[in-house]
Length: 456
Ligand SMILES: Cc1cc2nc3c(=O)[nH]c(=O)nc-3n(C[C@H](O)[C@H](O)[C@H](O)COP(=O)(O)OP(=O)(O)OC[C@H]3O[C@@H](n4cnc5c(N)ncnc54)[C@H](O)[C@@H]3O)c2cc1C
Image 1 (spheres, rainbow, N blue to C red):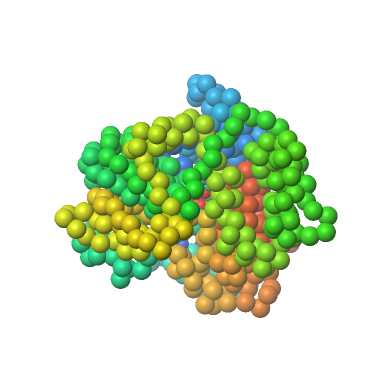
Image 2: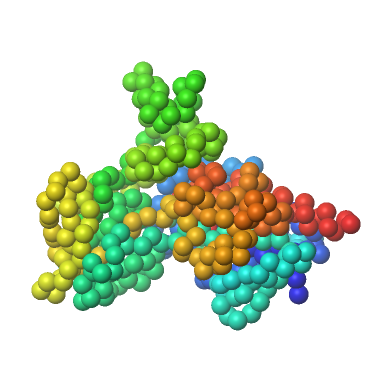
């Protein structure tokens, strides 16, 4: 059979597109969601069961529906959680909210299209032109769909050193994918741990370790040793001012700094920038974007992707107690000595060497660049000319409506991408407040195609 729509992926982007399509498509339409994640809709971010894993966006901005901003807060209140729109709810609760929202729509089936979950990974696909796209699944099935929405999220980054610089004996102590939280049960309470990377994933893993009863030292190593800032008390965003005649990054930054010197709170300025970031990104030249990624990204991340005050207090207390030690430097090798992994690194700003020994190494070096290398499906689509990788390695090339652009520069009216895969065009498209808007637009475009075909 041929589905009207295949949604490939099973994280937030996939559930947001599904929810919108359920509302927009006629009863005769069919949707298949292809996903390998057991907790559909929760993806990496919202499948955690640790209560301490908090959202980093206030509850009032996390509704899955952009036009019903209180939906998540209302759900929390129905569950008896004492949370206001400015509070930071748990990520586990957010996963449950998504599940309940979808379930409620599926229960009220009257007039709703058919939605099927196909528990599999799409490993390849073939363009069947007027019939659509047929996907090969890792359970050996095939699935044909007239329209496709790619919601693949991002892959986990590789370790920042080559495998040849890693002692064989240390391999068993390296956690390459920290999102499988089962690794925590292998850690003994007084083991020492090295976390590579100092962003939000690191914060998550530190909290999860402590929650699991871990009491050893946690070394955090990243190139600059910068850790995320905390949100402040809620205040109104401040509209950023840009220089009139240029988008050169140094000039843009200089105007922001002046606003801060003149009294604007930097957090309010970052919040004011948020709704303008996509437009600003699109005004930058390719070189300016590349320079931003090369030089400004670590600072962007810690100012833009902030953590809740409660999480920040807990993390800072661990630093003050010496339980978490942050190093700025470049890892060069992972050796093995006296039953411990030895981290050899060059401290930032020096040409010297330093080392420390740990029992575990956890790779938390990033998720923000989707690229296509992590996905056999995307690699095959690129080989067949169905998509192009964007030139900065952020994801794939799409047009303003998130339709994928093929190797002949043509926008495919039947294949869309949602979420971080489209960061090359939109940049600010990794968090719920942005993805939910894109998901709604893409679902609208797909529904127009399906409904148009229906009325023919
Ligand atoms: C730890 C963490 C915390 C976060 N906290 C917040 C927050 O508080 N607020 C906020 O707004 N945002 C937050 N984010 C951002 C978050 O990434 C987005 O909100 C959202 O989860 C992204 O969803 P996604 O579906 O695009 O990607 P993902 O959640 O990565 O889901 C993609 C899914 O697709 C599946 N998949 C991939 N390839 C295939 C294939 N070929 N076939 C089938 N399935 C496939 C994957 O297995 C995965 O389940 C957080 C992110 C992380 C990682």
